[in-house]
Amino acid sequence: MSEIIRIPHIENYNMEFINGELILTPKKQYISEKNLLNTNLNYSKIQKCIIKKNKEIISTRDKYSSILKDIWKCMSIPKILKTTTFNIKLTNEAKKNGYNWCDDIQLSFQSKDSCGTLREIINMIKINNFTIDLVIQLKLNSNSIIYFKN
Image 1: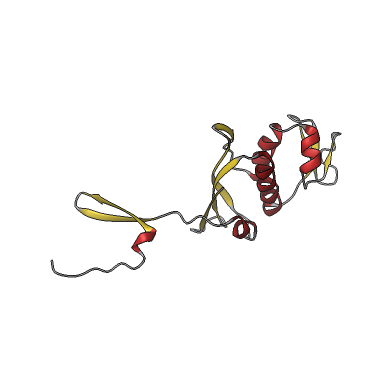
Image 2 (image 1 turned 120 degrees about the vertical axis):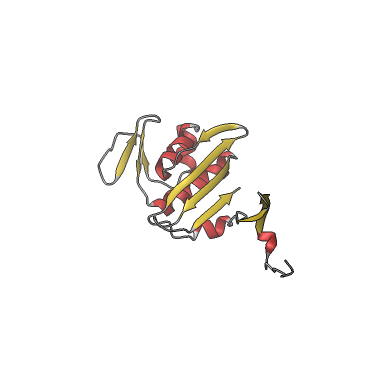
C-alpha cells in the first residue's frame, strides 16, 4: 500500500493498534470553569461525577441537587449559612415557596435549576478545597459531552 493518509490535529487523539488496525479515539477536551458556568445545562444529564477531599470520596451521584447535598453533609451548618448562595432556612419548609427539606443536615433550601445548582457546587468545592471530575451530556439524546476537572 503506497497511499499516504494525513490526519490533521492528530495530537487530539489517543492512538492504539488492535489486530493490525490503527484505532483513534478523541482525547477528552476539558473546558474552563468560566465556559462550564456559561453553558446551557437545561435537559443535561450528569454521566460521571467524582468529588473528593484528598483521597476521600465525597460524592459520586448523578443529580445536581444530590451532589450538592453530599457536599453540604461534610460542612457545619454555620459554614453553609455563611458561604451558600442558596436561600436556606433552619426549619422544615418542605413544599413551601420551592423549599426542600434535607433531613440529613436538618435545613430547608430553595431549589434552583441545574445551572444555579452547578454554580453552588463549584462554589462549595472551592470553599472546601475539594476536587471534581465531571462529565455532562448536554441535552438528552445529544452527542455533546463536556468534561470539567479542577
